[in-house]
Image 1 (cartoon, rainbow, N blue to C red):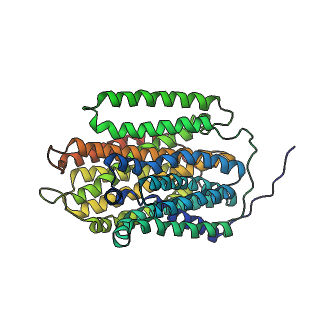
Image 2: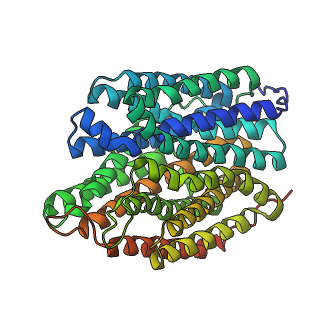
Image 3: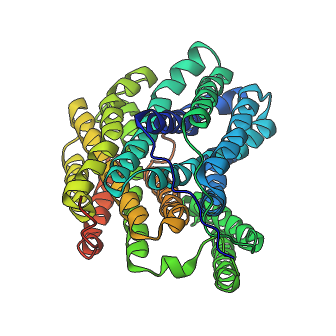
Length: 465
């Protein structure tokens, strides 16, 4: 029997604004660990290995939760799933804020990882309640505010942790998440559930993907020590290959796979995922290397900047990142997604190449980092928008989840590559890497980004309003 659903209620600026506030708050909460990891290691007496685990656990759980959240949102309705997901995130934030030791803090981060699924659920709501042209702009606004919130969290986490405590570093953005969730619940109308699906959750696929991501992160972390531990690294590569093979086989046979590989085979999907991964690797390399270059002692090169100075230097990049989403949405609506992505790639490749050649003044890095942040926001938002609009409405959550999971993996890979470069080019007995490490990193990032033009030029132009 076919059930006729009432048409969705058109939402106004207030509802989109509530989603934007939630994006800012979750972006801030997601980003507080990375800039304060040395402080957390000191206060909780963590080893470097434990610190590495803390820095990646949210990314791993986020990458796992995101496709599940998108699938459930497509099936049961975006608002219903989003509110429940944010309840888990709020609980995780409070656990992290109250954590007396590392195990409890890890539990809080595992729960917080659910926040990554908020974006595809927001896209489901926007697409169901707005016309196509307005959806592009709204998706751009929400994406840009999430990026801006992440930068705000990165800038504010250190001063809050040092001025108040590490507990408030988690508590303040958690309070903001709670408030934004209440607003979304009040202002956003319920969206009708999508097509019925009685196959349930693909738990075997979820477990195998978990193993794949954990093994990948461990392999990347061990890469700088491959010369001293070749057997351990080789074993991780074999285990990783086994997990990938098993996960692929399970997903192909599952009645309702967590990640629909048939969807990934569509040209629009695999191109978006490849571009997202490559661009996020380049962006992450810059995000990791620029603050390190600011902090390096000024003897010979570098600027010896402290945490407060670095935050000030990164502020223009935070502004550029927050503006990129709305600009990308408007640009995709007027000129098409391919034009926006191509522009962003040219801008990023130029900025990375310029940083490799010239980085002797603070303003060189400030402007270069701002250009990279703007370009990354333009590209990723345009690709998410293009993906969301290129699939059936009922597949919006699943499709955008694939792109966002790729984004997480790209950022993790880029950061690990940057760390490996600095480790490999740090002389024995010194804690200052050679300047050539930074030059090599910027060159690699620029070259990889430029090569992505080969894929970008084959994209569809995107629907223009």
